Image (cartoon, rainbow, N blue to C red; front, side, top):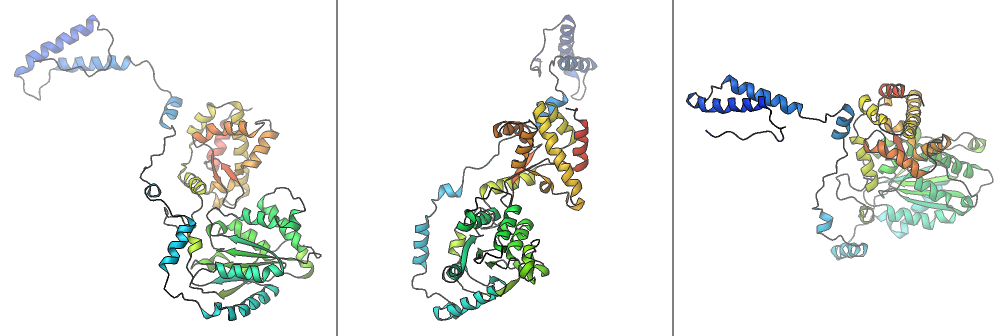
Length: 448
């Protein structure tokens, strides 16, 4: 009977003892021809056990815990399909889309409510402006796009009384920061040469500018789809509530979501704007809404041009960068203490200082914040600009290139994750570790 093929990829030169083992195997094979299939000589078992033992001892490199961690935690490449619908079908341009819509609706009479006819529209605008002068803000609901009517109100009425800023909230990349920057680009405010500041200070600065008694010009904010995702966050609503409660700032907004009224509390909806000396005190919050049914039955052609057809969420999904950051933030697994210790032991001393700086800030933010909301670690993160200023002050990184290099090792292993702030405040960085685990890792670090 022929000798079975060897299952070992590498073996050392056989010694005299191993040659005896092979001879025993061959003799056993010849003698076991008459044995049943389930019968195995004991000498064959001893030979195989001896060979397996020698094969295990021939391994020279044995992975440590550090090597095993980095071996099994390599950042893998995202596997995506190349069969993208946008590559198979060329998308229509803006002109082609407009021509196609016009040709498809040709010959079909358009439905238009009688309230939107030119004879009645002037009285509607007069009533809306009177309500704005009385200290209310206007919110419009109803079926159909309200963009054309609201823009007509802004150009024909509001522009004659003050400054006008139109915000397209349905745009995926729109943020509250864009709205504040547009307000500060108004010539009277732009002449002040204001420095860049966070959105909170920027909102307070705009409020104080229009709260001055000598300021006679009013500001009219026309916000399309105030119920859109960029303006739906608590921070964005809080900043808009400060502007909406200023008697010289008026908001005309539209909503299309059926549950949009649930965005505001009853106190915010029924609040009233202050008057007199109360304007100069700490800014109060509220919207003072008056609800108007503005059913136009018009199609949402312009709004849907920004829709993300690859998502079921439709137009309010955010840009590609924001979607990727949100997905990475959601899929980031919580880091263990052992894994964090392995990573910190393999980085440079300046990188450890940077980690200690960010971890200390995050721990203090968690302790001063609400313990019930500690599941969302992103809210306790640190802005990139603030981290860079502190890193430069502590002689950790002299420029942004050095800071990016120090963060690169942590980002590759998801010890430090980042995401774009939904309010447009910039990049937020945090450590995906619970309070107790992060404190233990800080204690285990060697003193610097």
